[in-house]
Image 1 (tube, rainbow, N blue to C red):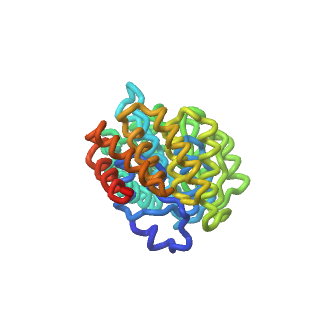
Image 2 (image 1 turned 90 degrees about the vertical axis):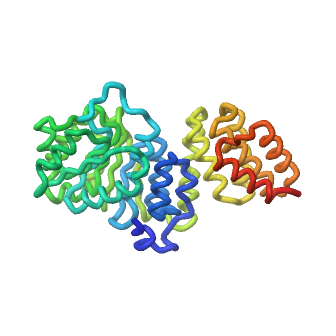
Image 3 (image 1 turned 60 degrees about the horizontal axis):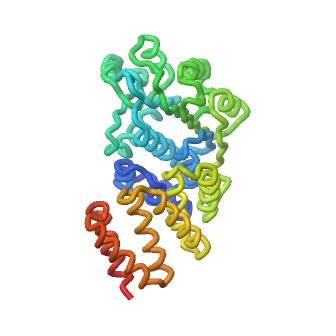
Length: 347
């Protein structure tokens, strides 16, 4: 899935990196394999909100990276939240609806690449071919079901699957759903999902017309409206920072949000942002269980900030003491990071 690099120039990418988003390890590995490093504008505006659990209605054309935006958010949510107790194998955890078989196939291909290390299974349903093969695969159980409305409804009415345990709903190219006459089918499926405040909903459309927004307000939970053209250049990071600052203020006990905000502050590298980052990482260090992965990341970031600010003696003392008290250092990867930092920071 190197199309992100192929279709989007360096000038069109934002300053927001995927590594700053604090994604689950398996997902981050798939993103790295896909060659993704920096977010496109729609990704930079969507992901901070979607990863925090908010509903999003985004305006974006094909080729802007919107597919990766909703797939990353969907995978992150399913990986961070355990499947509901008692969920049968015939109840997908996520549903992705697309207006055409070509788009459904493309989404499925991208989902295979990004999700190859997540442990989550995919199902695909579209008309014209492989009716029994698709049915058997879905009956065997899938976590994420991708498809077109007609075939999806067909299988649903035959009780091949149900949507009682759906945690995420994605609607791609909503405006084309109207143009192709699928709106009645779409509303049928939306009414079979859990209530809008019991799931996350992500919708993307080339235009946020009145009819598309009406659909969003009817079936989504106060969706954040995003237009990819609204920001350019360094503005994406400012937008992401502003969004995460609001979320961090509203959820002071949510370690994942607090850490993601601290990572974004680090990515700015200007003195004011680094000063804020130091405060945040110190807070995370104090509030995280000693020896936990987040505690080690906080310790490392505080040491890195001391080194970056020229206080190399303090950074060296901190790392040396940490290595003495915790020789395992959170695993080989974290140990290597501390060793490399120590070599750079010795006065």
